[in-house]
Image 1 (cartoon, rainbow, N blue to C red):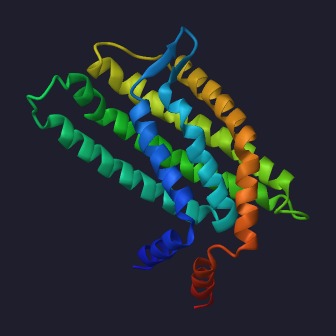
Image 2 (image 1 turned 60 degrees about the vertical axis):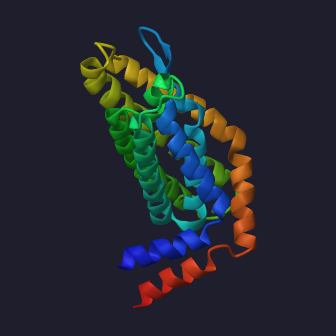
Length: 241
């Protein structure tokens, strides 16, 4: 399959540290999303906000150097690993043990199917929007597309849009539709979901602003060292066929 071959070459081309951090952040988001940090009449926040900025920063780095399609492929790769991890966690949680009381362990790592469903749908949807908007914003900078301003703008705007959609879609699916049924009536209002999404997006935008200089230096180094040469040659070869 053409996509499978492209994905194999891409995974060999992207430095392992970025792929690893990205994948770990996606797995951690799924676990942390089970805990609500703050719930008021007009706002609610879950613990996933503590790590989700890292996922979007990695996507911005990959999109800048390899393009939106490559970043979306890696997003799907991370989601599949997350699903596999959740299955392993679930199996571990249902295996009985008389060594100690593992109720808390089983509750956390056993996971909740609708939290996993919500996080997967929200993440993949927002990843596609983030990657595409990042790429399109970069196209607006004709004179210096590789400059600091171009990188900053494409990251800031796409992160805010992507994070808002990620937070909002997840919150609505989990806390509006499923939580009232399976969590003894616990729920968020749509307003709380919207404010959670907005507040989370702003908080994660601040993190993006703080760490984007690191992302910019990484992409600059990748250009200087011709990172991904095999992948780019493969893509160019496919275009010429």
